[in-house]
Length: 479
Image (tube, one colour):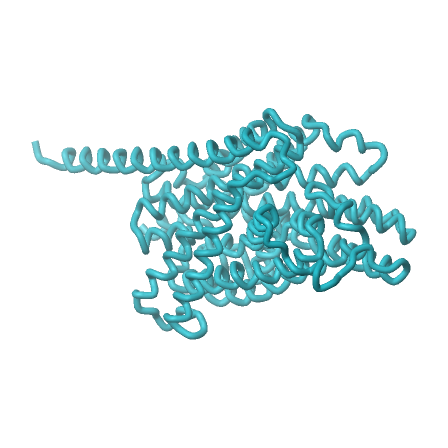
């Protein structure tokens, strides 16, 4: 019996180093450095505010909840424990589906950086939708295949992506300092310029930087594949959180030292900063290297999220809320291959849907907005679960939030409010969107369809489970 149960569970393959690199590759997205730089020096204070109001509450909540319930499924298990089956399923469903627009968004960003490997020869591809679609499909296929083969293979893509995060950030910082020393700062850092604007369009931007700090909950979905999870997760989260904050703040400041914020854009800003600064200081040869590493880091992030979120439908399949196939493992590689392949197919569909009827940048903005909304709905469940589960007694192995129950509730409330505001702001299209009504309809319509589909799947799963139980009881009645 034990052997049969073990055959349904993946093996533990992630050590502390793998876990730390996993947090880095899922916690840092170099595309947000470019977005922040385009908004000017005030984004530095917004980074700090988002870290305190969102990342810290999230990290403390994840540490406590993962030590209370260190099971495969993470968020799904916590929400189900706090609020029941439907909440558990919907939190997992929204988190899983949030990655459907995330995959093409992050791969679009990777594609935009690949162009700079041969900046002049490939410049014509910067607004070529076909190039972005083909590149996204190919890299999504590669990441899926590596994770189907197994985490012991897929983790190398994750680790390579995490390491590839560091070098471009270091290049940006070094070049920015060289440019500042030789020519002075390209941006004025004053009290006025660093004070965040309270205009509505500027407040909308805050939600994007808050979104950038998400990701520290992902490894908990693979709790049974982490060696010594109770000890490894808190240490990796602490070190990973400091790394994430440093990269975002230092990277943004370095870009603003090198080029004015008006010359940065959200799709290619980071590599643009490297390009312009490299030519100014006489090191143009670093551009192809930086462009390749930025692209690799985002492909690695795609692979990491593929691996993590596939465990949600896997656990839901074990609980019979989804068809039984989702709860099965590949015979040879012991991976949730059905969930992984389903993600690939739906991610590919979103690549085409996001591009429909708009420019490359318009597609990117729509994908980001949908990703933010669906990605943050599960955080409402997470923080609410953190508050409610304070009623349950904590065992000796539980890592409590400093200050105990009262502080935990206050911190979780801060995280909940920040999350709710972020969702509300993400519904508003960016001011430079040419067709704002179409963008709004895509975001709202896509979100509504996915929520209704999730509710339908849950109801269908409950009926299927009830029917199976009914048939089983009748088969056991003597004739």
